[in-house]
Image (cartoon, rainbow, N blue to C red; front, side):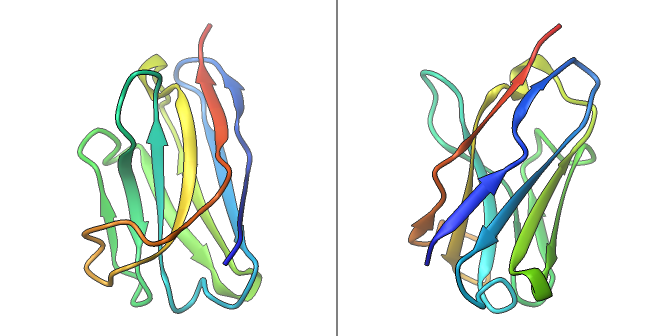
Amino acid sequence: VQLAESGGGLVQPGGSLRLSCTASGDIASSYTMAWYRQAPGKQRELLAAINRHGTTKYADSVLGRFTVSRENAKNTVYLQMNSLKPEDTAVYYCNAGGPVAMSAPGGSWGQGTQVTVSS
């Protein structure tokens, strides 16, 4: 499974970005899809996930600001990010194939896309 992220960039604090992750096959509807991020010097952390039932899970740090969604017909998962803060600056990764319970990452990762929040 190949994953390709897009939509990263530079945004001012308080701004919004939408990341996209397109999968190479018809997996978006049947796999758990998730977004992670990794800031310099920090471990990779789970931000949001959505399983094949449409159930979602969020990290406390992004709850209420980020929204994960999927468009099965396009094999694409999105991460809408609002009210961005400088501490959201990181490389954001798409992940596929985790368990339905969204308790661990799957085996497929995208290449990552940089998000920088700065004035």
